[in-house]
Length: 200
Image (cartoon, rainbow, N blue to C red; front, top):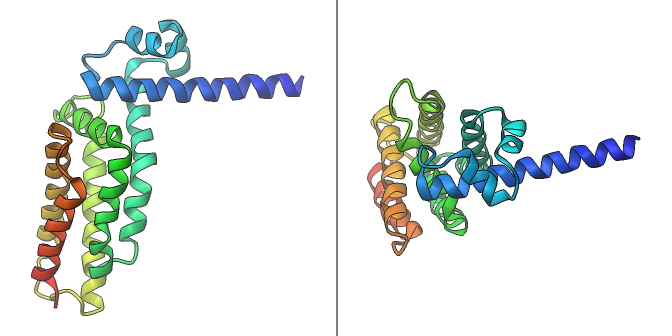
């Protein structure tokens, strides 16, 4: 019986992954508001009630998609910045190279964030907290560089961290609009100029 139970659980996990992937793809194309549970179910090849069996509501599925996007895209970003300072900032181009391999992840983020700008929106708090987390990580990277005397001590850390996050968001939008642009090239141009400006 344990073997049968394990197989059922495994199928359930695989089904959830398939639903999240289908939702991610459709949300990227149409937005969450323009995608119905029936649309997602059709792409997976199951019924709409089966989708809701796994996620309860469309809102719960939306949050699962956002969390999956971060799971797949955020770890590398944080790892690249880990050592902070000039080295960490210069490695941001590698993050852009990673995004190019899974463009839908970044495009999905752009679409869902735009749909959740208002305080009452389902994922508004999630995106707000995520932006604050990214700002804190970027500020920490700058402070590490200042502690090692790589980055100017007179730099306004908070203002510069917010500027960098604003660039990342803007570059994501530009690339989502026009995939012919090179995201790594945009990152390289920005971070090369930034590093020249803030280096001690």
